[in-house]
Image (cartoon, rainbow over the protein chains, first blue to last red):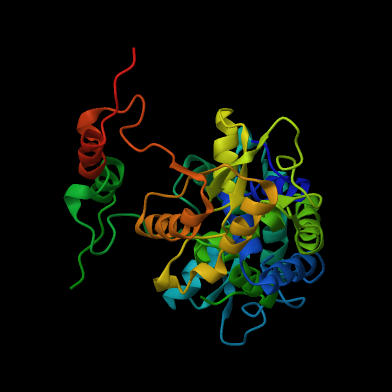
Length: 201
Length: 201
């Protein structure tokens, strides 16, 4: 595409570096900025500056935080000996939204994926192991995606944790509540029968 | 949603002001920035600064330009007396990509849309009328969207141009080249029969 201005071209190039945003969408976003209130451009610029300087990571769980410890690791209302292992911040927010979990988290920062060049040393696995002794962790809940990469990571981490003599659990898998059997995928349905649980009314 | 950090929350709010980007997508984009190369954040910040200061508008056609005149209005290879009336920059880029047009453009900056509070005075219609005399324009080609707003705008502009004694044309409408009849919408198909053209082999 031929852009009428170098600024527009550069802006489109930067916006199209985001996942799921192509050149056409990027141009639409840039024109939205130009057509709209100039304060939006200013605010976007400010936010970029703050993303560089104001982002802290919790020294315990690795979550993004405003201080040295995140609100969850710093809370007296959370069970600090139960740790839920998740891939990233979005999983923490999803679990927090349920309001069902009272423990703390540990953020891996990714999943083992040889095809993307991500090995165990790129993830926060050693930090988890150090934390188990330092904080007296009693249970680690595996809450990673049910994908090839997630399963590999769960397998690797659980092997590393084996000698630590702690409880290792996993979030339950099966047919979603409210889900209809006929629309469930074969693997989930098959495994939900094999791994059936005692009925409690 | 509860964000673990104020910076993240502000960044998500700014990103979700863009059309078609909700809170979840915005969070994905922000995390992409944080996970990736810091140079992307720097480049985004630079681009925001330049969008505020380095954007010029062509004094003739109103297109975004790097100087006082855009490359098209400044070119000796373009017919400066034929003007194609378009809504915005994206339409210019689409027509330029065809390589079929040798005239110049006039950018309206929108379409008349009472429901969105956009009236004729918000568009660059007076600039077009002034330009017709100043530049000796001989033909105005209407290339606006075939929507209610587009048709209203064409009607308004053509009425304003009536007394100027210039040729007013419109881009042709009909079944797309390569398009199959059975998939064409009723209105387009109907009008393409009513407005049929002499066959030339």
